Length: 131
Image (cartoon, rainbow, N blue to C red):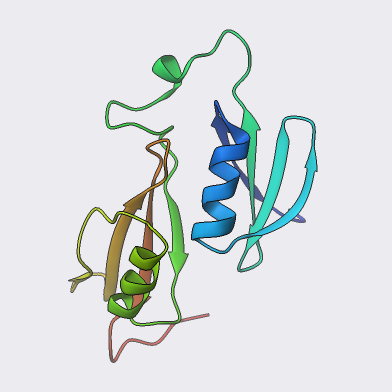
């Protein structure tokens, strides 16, 4: 039914947010056209686009900041190792890695420079991915 999917994040500064995702998190740039910057990570497309005129960050964000989207990235590294690498790149993390025993995953939360929340996850020891 669907050929592909793309998560789009509206921003007031495509350049700055694009630099964060490319330089800090290591996303690849697919292409740039006008106010649209398309990135890729782990086979998933993430697009950044300039917020349309007449819409401010105050009217399109959640009370906690960001736009309500939550980007989840599965890590092949233990999250303690990933956290150290990302801190070296200047990323401020919201928490230390912790285990959600009920879900069987280890989680680590962050915010991008515009307050969009995201998380890194890894299956806890002894849990296998169903895919």
